[in-house]
Length: 433
Ligand code: HSE
Image (cartoon, rainbow, N blue to C red; front, side, top):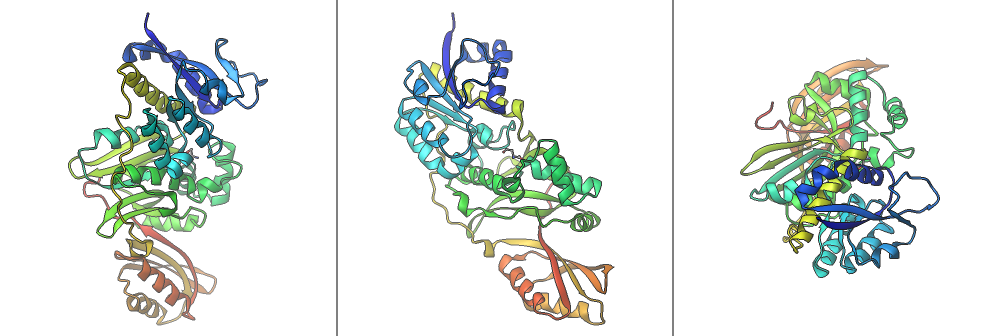
């Protein structure tokens, strides 16, 4: 008879149900790999009377203490989402000597430090592979497989909702409101889409990725965040003409001023590996000084992909339990690096503006860029909009503070009717496919 490792599941929504299902269906695969049977013995739910079609031998409870006080439960899997009470329950579970697996990006991004401190204090494992990229392995690869490297860059498409929306806008020439509606109908976007479209979901994932990549805690408030709500079909069409695709990017880099972490839409060269990531898919591109460029691609959300990542963590913890060990891959934030202020970050910029269609206006605009230290790579006069000419300019790489100064100066020019959009432009990779 093999050992049985008992698990308490907190939450039985989409992912929780997926975890129960995949563990049941794949147990014959999993058991020989672990050397123990993994058994969910308790499930914490809000509503006991709802029919969930769970195996009859699972104890359904609405009292966390039933799980915390059962000494046979060795792993607590938190899938409640949100900060409260998920954070408190995880801390109590660790205090009770239980290992914790979670998919909770909110808690890891904002309270990762406390969670790791508790895991160390109470000699347990704390695992969170599913918190970034759903089914895509990225936390463990960064912490283990790539740990020989100095990581210099992590760029990701880590939000499926916005990637689906931008793909549809690009491929079907659809407007923002229509694609949002389509995403909501397909279940990719929430009724309140704010967290996705304003970049907050991606920012949480960015804080987690950057903390691991640079071995230094990156709190959520350090991630400069901008969403996709201002992106228009016009910007997407011009970007395409210029050889770019617009994506919502999670960008983490280290430069001489410190860690540069941000989430924003960007023009990405069509040849960049991330430009091929369409619809609701996610991908994370990592550059290490030994490995070079790597990319992790797959489904960033969904019942079974997320369950795949959660169960991988459960299996890792179970292997530790069997070997009577813990904390093999604990907190890796052993440095305290400074942050590069957003105004000192460097990028190329796409600027779209409406100006008076008069002789000399292009020269005035070029002068305004030049006076504020912004060197232009290309200026194209596009269509006529009413009495105005639409101009698209692409700058060379420049500090953010200079482009903001240029924006101010342009706004004060009588010939400039409107600055429609300013979007960062990503450089090509060294070995594009
Ligand atoms: N809302 C997220 C996304 C999935 O659209 O990718 C959960 O993190």
